[in-house]
Length: 337
Image (cartoon, rainbow, N blue to C red; front, side):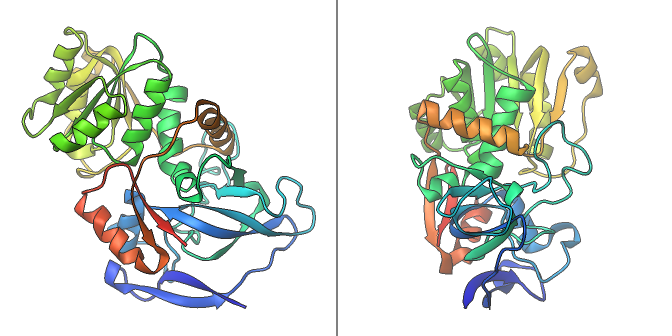
């Protein structure tokens, strides 16, 4: 029996992705096979496919986030059963506790094989169950974008009533952060270069919106919206183009949670602002299995729904990547198998 797999074989680039056949895997002791039903895109996946920074060793099956159904289990597996709906974890070795060098050394989608395969062999410890309230496409958005946002506003900088959170843009992490922060009772400010997207953010619960093209100094606008105090938490996904505006927007003693590099990989930092305002800078890379399970239970309890911009069939993965590259999406881009 064979399965379909998307693979970067000999050279990086969207145009070099190949849809090929591979033997279906069989589970050994402590392993499971997951029949994959959906995947979702992250900016990291695009960077991986184009080979940014030299890339990982090839060949490589890309993409880290997906959802599916356990189709077979190996000897000794008790955590999950055949038929369970699960998500593979981004960090296969980070199960609980604080992040360490060891716990973050097995990420999916580079260097370890990713989810763009119809059947996926995994350690049984490396999957988590997801609620039947979510479609497979919705569940596929959780392992990176959902968990990163969850960790940002509930674990590293837990927010609640009386707090103000600023989210940048309307991509996957930012929209999840908006949803989680609102569910916890916080006030949310959203930024975007598109008035249409800002209107959609308001429908999701954003209390204030800022068009950063109309207001390049949006950090000061955010402070004005808080009566001059500044925001408690900035969910920073832009990197090079946004970091100093985030510092400007934050209150004295506030937090800037650094998650993404959509605008670039390096930025001059106004160091006097950091110590003068006593800012807390948090770097976040996804989360643990324990944190994923907490998030999944919260989503189920509060009936939250991930926001999907567009779904592509498995045969059109390159088109999904080009949409990600163009940056025209609101929420998540997903692949249905």
